[in-house]
Image 1: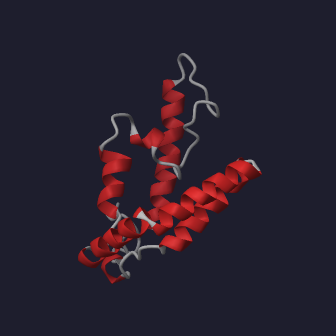
Image 2: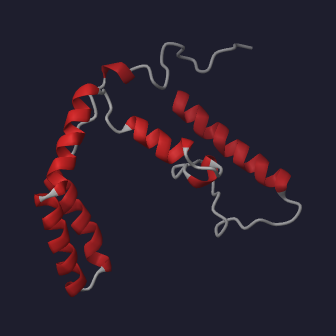
Length: 141
């Protein structure tokens, strides 16, 4: 039995990480437009107009300064977001990340999809492990 992760030992998940271009900082205008697009379905016309005015003031004011700081950070780092994302999404939380952060996870963890029931821990663990291993295999092959 071989002790290799995949049939292609030179192919690894992060093998090409260093050849990828740096993560670009999105434009301020594009980010604000995306935000307004996301708000529109949930706001009345009046609420949307108030929100659009706030977004415009932000974009013409402190938003410009903050965007310049992001651009400056991007000049000194390969990925300006990675450290913040790792800290905010994984390291600062005090609850299980597999259940609460892994949005693309391999199995249905949400309690409304798969409610907890007395005496089924072994069944749930087995199914979760099977899905996790399938996902792991896909990543590596």
